[in-house]
Image (tube, rainbow, N blue to C red):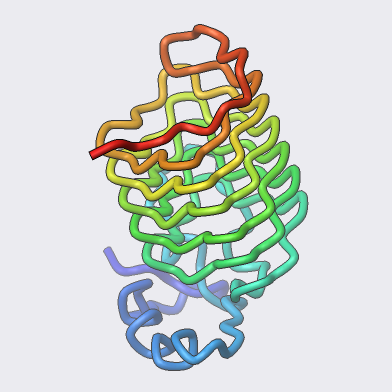
Amino acid sequence: MSPTDRHGTPNALTRRHLLSTVGTLAATGGAVTLAGCTAGDLAGAISGEEQGDCDEYTLEPGADLREANLVNCDLSGMDLHAVRLRSADLRGANLEDATLMHAHASNVNMSGANLRNADLSVVYFYRATLQNADFRGADLTRANLGGADLTGSDLTDADLTGARFGGATLPDGSQYQSDTEIVRTP
């Protein structure tokens, strides 16, 4: 069944079509406003699950998304470097292959988020809730995860070079006391 617009008219626009249409604009740093897309176009949420306001925000590099409700939104592959996500709610969001390099994400809630292969280098995740998040293959180079809760998260094959975990709760539930950088050796 294809998505419909607000008036019930069938809408053939899919997220993939939208990204291919605006991809050139986004790649050159232009703003991409997603207003008018249905939540189904942008999110892979299962019917009945809580859904954020995926189509209410301008998603571009450097965007101010403080306290945004992006629960279960599909932001995979998007360039969101240097966005401000302080106290935003991204529970269950799909950020696979997304670029969030230099983002400010203190107090963000990304519980259950898919961050596979995402560029999270130099992201400020201070006191973030990252429980059960999937970081497999993600680049967390020089990320600050101080005080973050990573309980149940999967960091398999993630690049943690220079990352800081002072006071963080690690995936196994233990507390990381040192503020020493993680150094990757050959």
